[in-house]
Structures are given as C-alpha cells and as structure tokens.
Length: 478
Image 1 (cartoon, rainbow, N blue to C red):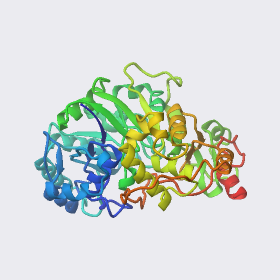
Image 2 (image 1 turned 180 degrees about the vertical axis):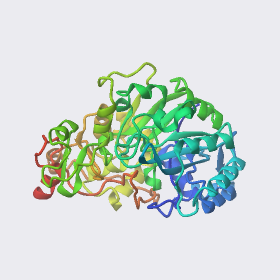
Image 3 (image 1 turned 120 degrees about the vertical axis):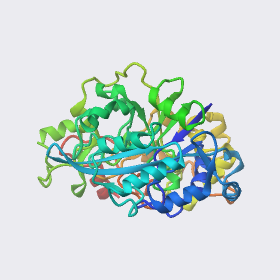
Image 4 (image 1 turned 30 degrees about the horizontal axis):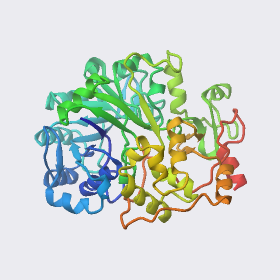
C-alpha cells in the first residue's frame, strides 16, 4: 500500500514545542495532513514514554495506534473527508556533543526501535550515560558511533538515521561542528547507516551533488515542534504497513517501495544561504568567497549556510541525479498559500477558517497540495486557489531565501499581482467553514519553520554580494 510517513517529530516535552503535542493531538493532526505513519518522537523522556505506554496499543507488527476511547474523542476534531488510520513508530532524537579528533562535535541522530521492551532497555543504558529527563531530545556526551553501537546491541532490528545532515550547528556534515563524510563520524559502523535525513534547508537534488551520499537513502521529515507543521517534509512509501516494511524500504531505497519525498522548497529553511542576520545581509556562496567570509557591513564572520557547505563537498555537477534517485515533490504549506491569497498572517482567523473549510470539502492538506485536480480546486470556492497550487506544482514561485536563522519566504504571486487581483475583486471571497479548525502553531526550535508571519514580501530576487538584502529593503519600503 502507498502511504505518507513523517518519521521525525517531537512531543511537548522537547524544548520550544507546542503544548498540544500530545498523542491524541498528533493523531488528529496526522489525519488533517493525510499522514498514515508518525514517529512518536522523544521516547527517551520518562513522562512521554509513560504516555506512549498508556495511550498507544499494538497495531501492525512494530507499529502502534491510539487507544480506542482516545481515538473516538480525537476524531471529533477531524473533518469526515480527512479521517483515516494513523500509526505510530517508536522513535527519538538524541543530541550528541563530544570531542573527536581535536574538535567539538555536535550532531543529532534519530533512533528507531521495534517494541516497548527495546525502548525500556535502551533508556536504561542511556540513563546511565547522561540526563534523559531534562528534555525530550536529550543531550549526551556520547560519540555518535558509540550511540549507534548501543542501539545495535540493544536490538538488531533497531536503526539510526543522522538527522538534518547539513544544518551548520548540529549535524553530521554541518559547517560548524560536523565531519566531511558520514564515514568519518561512524567509522567501522558506517555500514549500519543506510539512510540520512536531508533537513529543511536542503533537498535531494542538492544532496545528489555529493557522490559519497549515493550509498544512503535520502529521507525527508518535518522535525515538527507543533501539530500544524507535521508533513511539511515527509516520505511517500509503497510497502507493507509494519516496522520491518518501513525499515526495509528505507534500507533499500528501492523506488518500488520508497516512492518519493515531499519537501519544502529548501530556500525556506533558515540556514540555506550564507549571511549575517544582525546586518540584514545574505549572499550566495560565491560572493562569500569574494568577501573572504566576512560581512561587508560589519566585518564579522558570516554564518555559512547549507548551500555553501554542499558546494564545498560537491564532486558532481547540478542536475545530475545518480542512478536510482527517487523523485522529490516541492510544496508550500497550505496555510502559507492561503495567507498569501488572503493577504493576512498564516495564523489569522481568516486563514484558519479557510483551511478548515477546504479540508471539509477536499480532504487532507497533502491531497490538496499534491493530487487534487485544478477543476476540484477551482470548485472549492476560494478564488485563485487552483492557480496558486498549479503554479506551486510547476515550480513557478518567487524566492527570498533564508540565512543565519532568518526564515526564507516562498511566494506564488508577486505583490503587484495581488494588488491587481484585489482591485478586480478576485480575492477574499472565502468559503464558510463548519466549526472545525486546525491545531495552532506555537514555539519553534532550530529545526522548526513556523507558519509564515504576516510580513509583506520584499523583491524576491538574489542580490549580488554586498547589495542591499531583501530584508533590509523590506524594512525600508514597508
């Protein structure tokens, strides 16, 4: 069967997460998104693990579902057109901070296990090493290679995937504290790593440029810190609904079982380009080299982004996918599309109402963005929704990239287009929803992209090195 899986999320016990990140809330949000399999996240945290044990029951082999009474209550908040099965896979993220080869290394790793007993055994071992109670994503002074060894010793079925591998500060290939290859990090146990997570600031085509990554399946997950951000990155699988089926699809990367990834446009990630946020400056890596890595406004070092780091390690030209590469589909979250059409913030009441009405009429968000026809979208009652989604699918977008912790902005229409459409009265005729609304989005972490704030777009083009940045121009003009 084909289904969508998001295998990296967090609970409310992780730093800077939404309070409604509980299991019933995740169950309901997954249905609104169109996701069948969710990671539990954070199983190392004792309180969250207690909720996993008490609120989830076994389903297919190695997967779990919400308890029946909780399911009935949670489904009341889900439009009938979105309802479907939701399964949970036991998973957690661990922050490894340690010294290796004379440098401090900081990388995040995802761990997946097949059953509750394995979680208990693994948590006992990790509790002897560091504090697993203070945060849903614990920080351990443990070499990533040694973490992998412990995972494999605890259960031969368990596996580890390096998380968001290009993020500057906390990843296996990050510019600030990573390595130049996966093998440098995991050493003799590298053959047990069969997949890596691309993260929010890169996508498969960027990773294809590094031939050393051909050995790994490129997976995409949301790293969501709120229910509203589930599925912004995800995986489309066509395999048996079970722990083994999912693990085997990730291991092989066979297009017959691992169909595709769903990705944000990577320019939306807040570490995509190089830049210095305090000076409202960003630039392409080629201009960083011309400026010797320094901000032209204050002379301080620029934060080196994912695009630059990929360029450093690349040994293959752009647009040269390796054999067996799976396709990726780039999407803009529906709330952001609606915010653009409504010319309000993505968390506004107007957007929440339009979002709920569309889900009632058309089904889950990812179906709306990926598969609904232009005719179906046009019949939904929201002017220009069909045009916006079709442009997004074709990649006809306008980009203001993220840098140095500043989120990027991806737009479908230019400001002038929206002004003209507004003058023609083609905007704001929103469908009326029944009283069902999506979960709110709240705090964020370094891996998190919130629903788009209601700031107007700048001219969405890349400036030459040293030119006024879009953010500075935006502040001046608006």
